[in-house]
Image 1 (cartoon, rainbow, N blue to C red):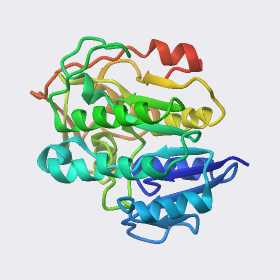
Image 2: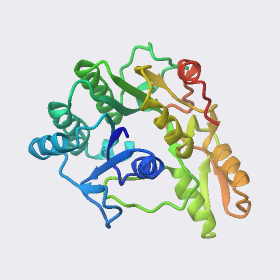
Image 3: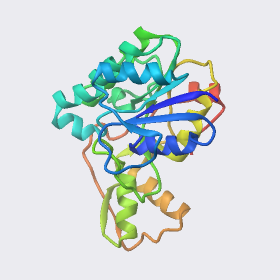
Image 4: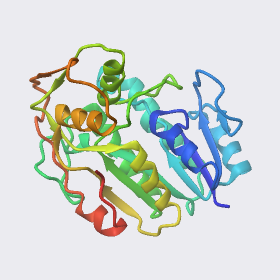
Length: 277
């Protein structure tokens, strides 16, 4: 069995991925601020400690690393840039110092590096204005300079179907999940009708992540579903899950920059023969 290491295994995406892979692979998850014991194969480790990471990699020696550990959420990164740098860039540097260069590695980047670009592809010249986008771009460069065996996904808004439970202090979830949970609790919400983004369901995302384990199609890929407003995406998900939303959802207007951020994901769709819904 392939040995898979997942950093940030208690995070929103990381825990979904761990549960998806754990029965078919030899999976070890690491995190360092668990709110509760999750699984004997998810261990607590300080990812900023080069000594601890070196010891971990010597003992487990993974074939593939999904490096998902990070300070999640663009707004939180903007509010505390020094902390964000430490728990995004410094953690990656610490990991790469001990990682075998022949080990495949996956890194989740963000559509925030595209802010202001119209329908960007993987060759678009980037100069992200946000702290979150800048940090992700730094991490992309660190990985590209370390190995050729990398997968980098520039990801849009990732969400599930609600029922979110925070398992790690660093983890977060999308507004879509929070909105669904509020609707199920019969709380009123307001959601942008004029702000349009691409989205990806985490349930589809982890399926694609698994494809990477035995893939040699290394490189950078944009991933995205078709462009929709936050309101339209929420309503579509509610209809899909048969959630009664009419009494609780109100459209509102936002001024978030940019108002529309579409993404060219043709390269990914052609290589992996998959389209996100």
